[in-house]
Length: 206
View 1 (cartoon, one colour):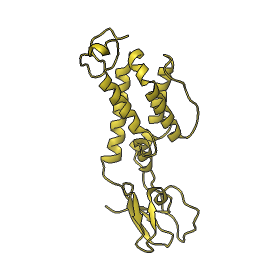
View 2: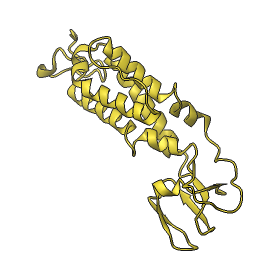
View 3: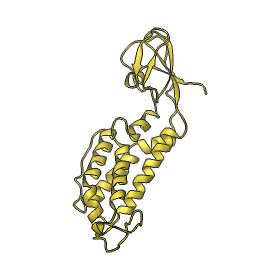
View 4: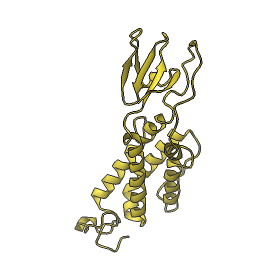
């Protein structure tokens, strides 16, 4: 129980009905929102993964010509998206909270699934953590740092332009931020999920 009259996260004085908490209610909401922004198919982690190799894989359609090397990946992006990066940091916090009876540790699965599960676990137990977990300020600081790193890498350098090959053989120039792209050769429209499955022709010239 927090014996201080101040929130340990933002240091503001707690309201009377917040006394005993380690974090005030606005900080609790901010932590929850920051966690939520990391997870899900449209979250920062998923968007960051798309910046590694936007055209990973194929639909199985045979296209003449050879494929070039994948679009170069940033080491900073790889560090955050690989096992040992963001997912492991989140799971370490789940383990720490579990030691205080605040979470249940999951096991295995693909990286995106593990990120989503860890975020869901932390958000579910956050209302109890602000009451019982004294290092909540350290947690808030690290989650805010992760969010900032992901946001910078996703948005800071501007849209990544790349070239893919349509089934008709025409080259499509696109960005990951474009929800729908039409081939100028045949008019076929692709949403983002379909677009990144087309054969990669490399990074578009700046």
